[in-house]
Image (tube, rainbow, N blue to C red; front, side):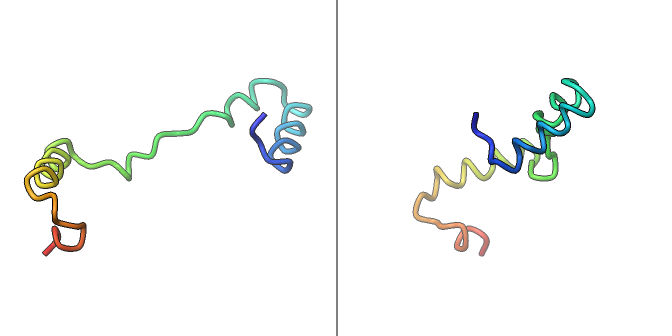
Length: 62
């Protein structure tokens, strides 16, 4: 099934108390927009990585 024992029993308890819909809502991850950057910055980083392959993350900040 792919769940830890603790998660399984938590899902089972939730299913028994509130039904199938309560468990369905838990299985879906919500998107986290905080870890996204603007497309322009992403393209700039990709271009720099291609143009300067020897740069590591620390050197590229300098």
